[in-house]
Length: 169
Image (cartoon, rainbow, N blue to C red; front, side, top):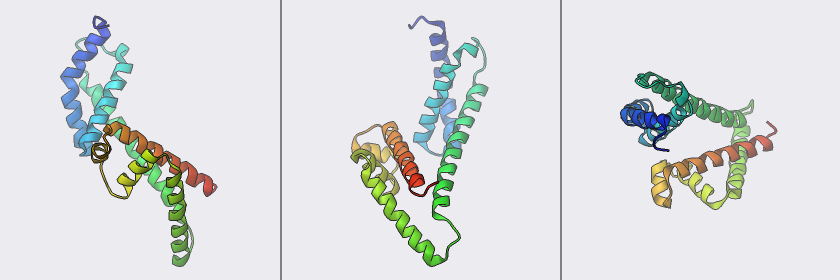
């Protein structure tokens, strides 16, 4: 496999551009872990499109676009999640009604969280209640940061699905 021309070209492009891609991703996110993940996603996307790459081609403009799109997609996803949760809690009610709705909403979220598998629940609570980063949680639980990220994504998807079903949305 090491004599595969696409693999050799990819390895060379990876070595030549990895640091530049990482620095650009870090500049956009100001988060080392996210920058590493974005760098990995960027090179996965490059590998999937290696048939379009010619030897000697300056690949950084393409990688630049990949990074930019990955960051935009992540940001949009987070924005949609935030808006969905705001939509569930907002409504044309008085402040007393809002307080009661908020309390009911929080109670239901707690019930949903309690139904999660233990590790996922712990990761979610460490992230959301304690404000821990992926890296801090990973170190605390002896996991990789990407495993933490995956569990947190699954937890958020589960909560969103359960809440939307509960509130008929």
